[in-house]
Length: 559
Image (cartoon, rainbow, N blue to C red; front, side, top):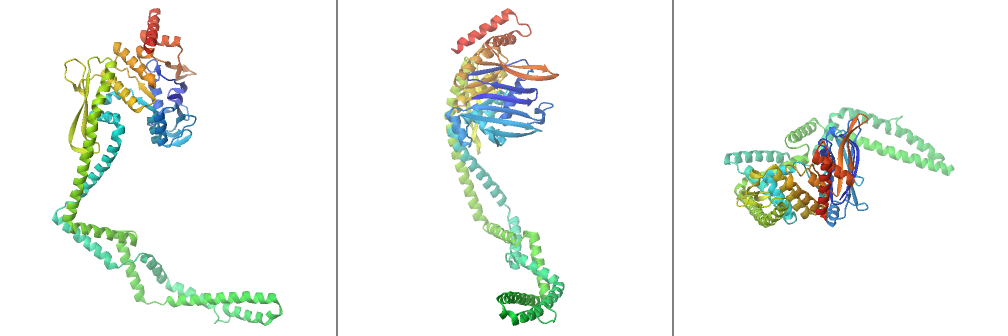
């Protein structure tokens, strides 16, 4: 359950903390006091959209924290699948808003908004103020049915989604492949030219890099030759003042006295090593110089070869590996074009297989949906009777679309009759706002039982209802509150009277600032708040008496 809510510096809320309880938690307050703001804060902590103007004017950041006590086995299992660990059976979701951006954390560790939403979906079901209006969209009806049947449908829907993607890919490939004879011949001729151009080049991986290095040497051959000739002379043995000649003379002199002292022998060995290294170096320079001897023809051939490779690069890829890879793809495509009929036949066969499997899976989905539709209809109808739809008939009409999709080939529509003898008609055509609100409450109750969600939040579920219907809704709220935590914002005294914990949201002016505050009411204060809802601006003794009586009757109903 949602144990604690902490909101800081969001809109009109400077700082507010609420400790929720088990059962039915009711929030009331004057219009404009900030009830929707409170639900907006909760929705924000659950991964909702962030906007720049959420942070309270003058504050550097806004913060929302939700502390959940997790005791239900299904919730623990689902969180475990998300790799989320509890700390003392608690999960803390927090969101810090700064400059239109957010930092999301679960138990102190930074997570994405997506992970925040997934965790919240396990623990809490939030029914928004206008969510019942989504029932006016037919696609929502199939979503509700599938949610009710999720455990059975999910693996089939996942497989169907994969099959449908393959089906679409094959359709696209077949469409692209189905060209007229002239276009195919034109493409084949062009591919043959490209393949031939690459093959005739006789490319070798890494050849371009080798040729680039060789070309650089040839281009600067004169400068290189001049420099190395000078180096060869200065380090050789032919010139009188060359390094090799001078070291040779020094080694000869040292050898004459080396036998007189062991240290002199060591020095002679060292100098001999230097002489050997210099001799090797001089020989390598000489070999390099001999390699620099090339004719104009070799230079021209190298240049032409590089030009050819660079031309191919400009057409087919940035290096030789890319060019050869392009050649391979071109060969495969040419083979397809040359074997057009066989490839067409194979694609057609694969497409038919994908379509057959897609229809088979869609049929399985449809069979399950039809079975579950009857069960869901009866459950919703039972709850609607509890919500003062006394002579109601409710059903789910399923129709098959001509083609299957990633979601099968079913179209679902809720149908309802609220008057005896009247034929059930599409919900979107006959239900009023108040009726839609109650129908959504019935659906949420069924789905909550199905999912075993620990906390359900209703934001003004009482839209468009009053009188005995409001009383029925309040009783339904109390009933739901016996098996799970319910948090409800309401304008109706009948619903507020059922509260196990009653909170007042009020707007106050302090230090020249307008602020929204939330506090838990005592039993006496709760009765006074009920009187305010019933009596408006003037609260008389009679109104207070009625409020007390309403509270007592509600307490009796819950027993």
